[in-house]
Image (tube, rainbow, N blue to C red; front, side):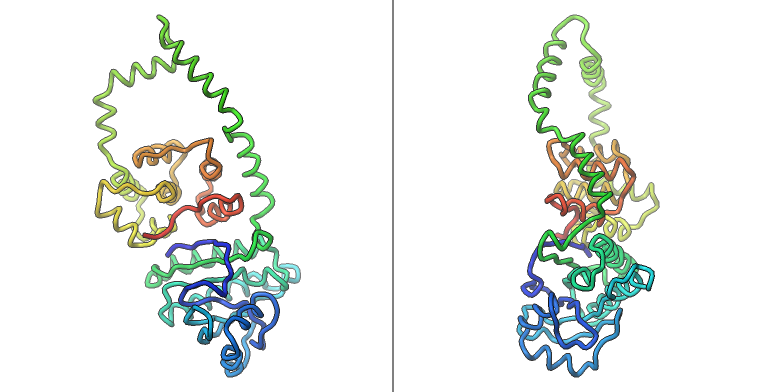
Length: 337
């Protein structure tokens, strides 16, 4: 079920189906449409002529011609006017109809461009939001299609944009919390603590360590709960089902089943963070879950700071988080086995 945002040439995607941002005549054109027709060869246009066009918001399917995919799904996005002429509903329909066709033809993977965000003028940040929200909602609602892997393919950074407000907020949070420029100060602080711990009246930090040592048995008992066990406990506490959890975490069913079957399973850090987001854990509980997998949130890692920003602000939409991570050149959360 994962949704991945990647930078690539959609005509070279080795998936079951790619989606073409077409015009109503299905006769080829500029941008993505023209690139797909050129790569697929004349067979594609010949098939399109038999379809009698396509209405805005609808989708139709052909073979892939010379492309490495089996199918091309042609959908016609809306031309942006002012957002008051039903553009959002039509754009949502493009994704819904395309996903339904992909499922009907047995596709396990499909790649979308950002429909209408080129010459049709749809604001890129809004086009991205509609794409991720609509794909997510479709996959959550259609359990039978849960293993469908969806790619949102962008050709370059200029064609991809999160909202300016979100970008600015994250950038400011990174500036306030990024630790690389304070590394020397941190080393000095550690040295001061080590020195202070040697005197007769140690400061609070040292006393905390003493208290921790005195209750070592309690600490070890708490550590007995593995990462997987904590995840399952939290799922039960929140009244979630397994599918609700792994879908909200942008994980596929096979990866999650490993976690369910092996109480000592150790995930990748991005998987652990994805589950913390899916479970909507507050920051301290998210840190505890990461610790059980052997990780920590680091202020020397921009990706960690971005995820922390979302958790601190109570924003748990993993697709919005991944869009932000992509914008800052960081590794997204979730994935598949």
